[in-house]
Amino acid sequence: MKPILAKSDYNTIKELILNTPHHLITKEISLLAKEIELAKKVPDSRLEPQVIRLNSHFEVQDVASGKLLNFQLTLPKFGNLEEKRLSILSPLGVALIGFQEGMEIEWALPRGLKKLKILRVQNPVHTD
Image: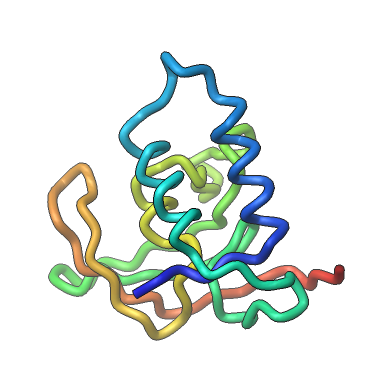
């Protein structure tokens, strides 16, 4: 399963990675760099509205436990877990970017391999 990225998100994320000092590169940043290079890039106006992108609000469910998680995916400077804003550089952010409502993904998170189902995605209106 290949992620799908809006070209503007690809450019923003790539710039973020390129501007991260080498000594601050984490496992997640390395994985994100690989994911965005493998991703299908599409014009913003052609990205399906159910795809998780920067600034998306989403709800996912841990398939094993049934636990629901609700967040907005943001750039690191806007991340704040108390306010349900999840950084793109977090393990969950890396796992979900570019995937869409209804999909199930497996990803290694800090508490082990998790299967997650994307239940709902809401995106702001974009124009290019």
